[in-house]
Image (tube, rainbow, N blue to C red; front, side, top):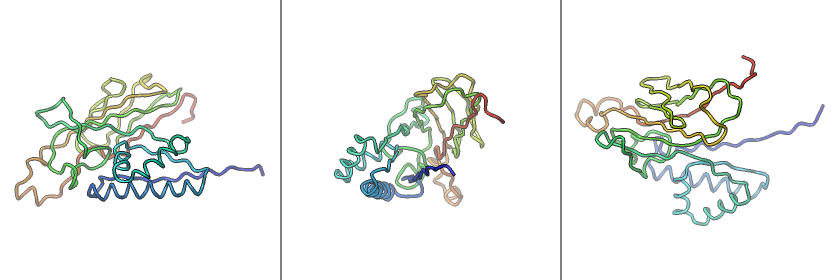
Length: 225
């Protein structure tokens, strides 16, 4: 039997705004990164990939020593920082002008306490991604969305979804192999801002924002069905 090589991929799914207070989410992020750095010191072959630029800012502010250790791992090509989401918000009267908001820094429910529980309006999520060459057909699946989502890729409006499934067929030839730009505008209802009456407070509250996971599914030319 020929020799086989086993690849072990570790995953740390961190969503610091999902049903947590911001302070708890930041603590979980810091502790996860500390654990990863300890493992990488023990095992020189380990590599790690992480996005979320806002979280690196938290690390720099809360644990400068950890931040410097991560910088050394980045310089050694062992810790790879990948693109996350750049977010902006706009209330109805502000749209389409968006402003930055420190509380919203990625995917997740923005209506939890400590984020924006009374916000009604639009959140714009911007990012970039690479794609393989030779794509024959592609589908973008946004996962969980509350409530409507308008999608633009490479400056082109792909479509607007008002109910699940929030999936969009991408036109042929739209994607390039490097640096595809994506923007998703998610708008919730006025219930968060105006729902302070006794009746609304007694009703279950839905999330707000883009919860994900956002996935690109595709088939390559020559693939068998």
